[in-house]
Image 1: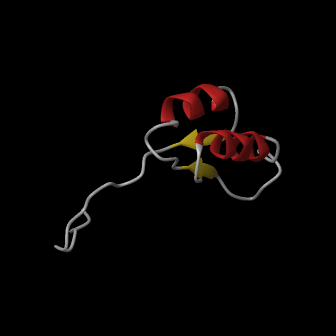
Image 2: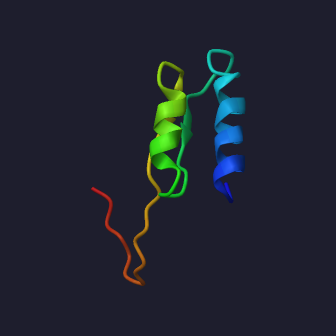
Image 3: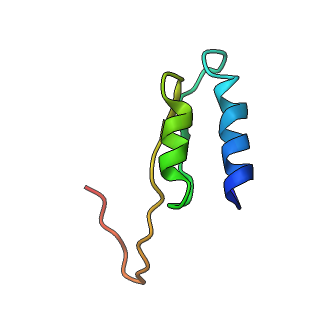
Length: 63
């Protein structure tokens, strides 16, 4: 996802395939359109998550 218009268009396209896939659909847009993405996906099978913005050279220990 590169800009707001294309990001939201991609989300709309994904909403059209929910319920027809064998997997869950999760979208992690950039921070700027995240609120609009959540609004656009309410009531659909698409879940919005956030990108990890950690900028570290240290390994991250997963719990």
